[in-house]
Length: 356
Image 1: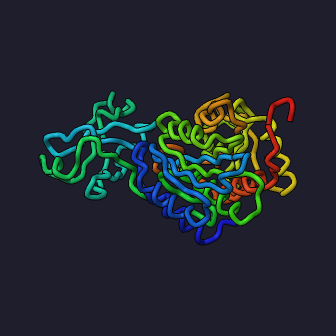
Image 2: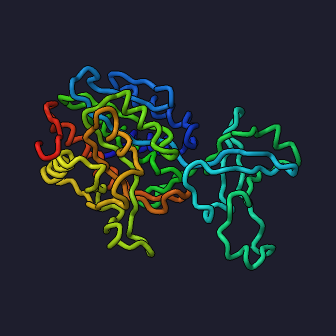
């Protein structure tokens, strides 16, 4: 079960701001939480946090969850004091007008709102068209060039911080993708620190996933794991307009999502399934929305001579918006799957398909 201290950590993590490449706030929160449980902890040159148990063990198991978030970056300050910006990561422009943001400056966070020409003044064609980011701006309430004294070109911009429990188990926040995954591996790491395990564990909070899995590439190269589980969000299909027959029948609260595709090593996946059956841990099975790629799993799998990998996903509604929703019951399922899988290892496994 996720205790009160862990829930507080989750809230603190979700209330940080840090688009890809600027993950300083969440990295500090992550380090501070993991330090008491780790035998060794460090931050690499990209900003990945790497906490370890049994770092000298021959067999090393890597856990990965990225704590960067989608966001924006200041491009220029307009003469009237408004700010032009570009996206960092994949963002749906339809969700942006009227959205609150925070500009992360050297002197602190500056609140703002994304503006667009009012619907009353739009032409019929403009009303029908999807807005382009170059037709939007950020308004911080600064007149003329006063904005230039507050904001610098290149400053990162995040969606305004938010955290809310919509029910006893459903959490709502701007950056569940993928701070919820980073939380899962941290909680699994904490629980494993209290158990006698026969392998080494590296818990890696990764950066720059939204820009091409960059943190996972360098993090995995540095750890050099024998096997790994990455935790990310997946698509909940229990909302109108998403066809379960194409993406699987994935519901909030029914358990973490496991996948059968090229990113998932068959022997490792089979071990996770046996653990789930033995300990009666709920899960949901899909093929994923693509055959490979899109998460840290793919980058880790291709590191050095190859790594046995598996992806565990937390069902997520409204992905890549400021209103993402996940269920803590799925989080608990993911934590249990990881803890019991690693606890079952002897350190002599090879996970070679067709042999193991």
